Image (cartoon, rainbow, N blue to C red; front, side, top):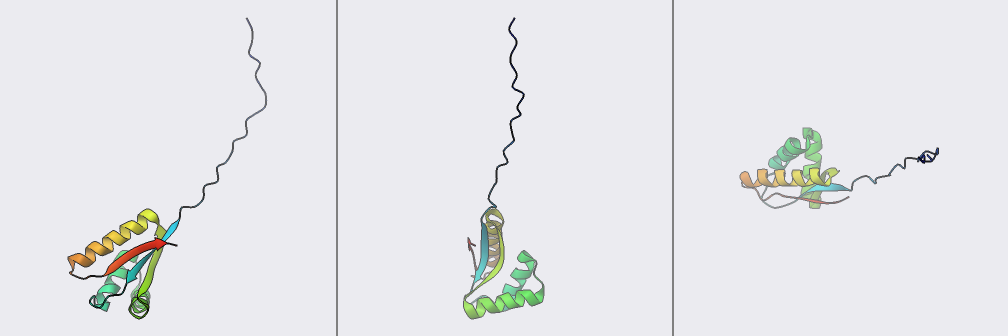
Length: 102
């Protein structure tokens, strides 16, 4: 009976280098109807910001037309956009929340 010749060399494990997932900015857009206090509440409730940081972002939205709330992986960013939009509509505010690639 013939015996198998076994190669004594080991196969080197190749490590696959995965690129980190793309990140997305979540932004609030200014409108003429949503109260500033409501925007601060949104920033605290959905982005975990303290009142001072939330106020700075709210003022940026108010003066520059948009402000970054945070930077997240795509799924997290999409969830935040949906949560903020649903919360704003349920409180009868037209606040727009969008995401864009970082």
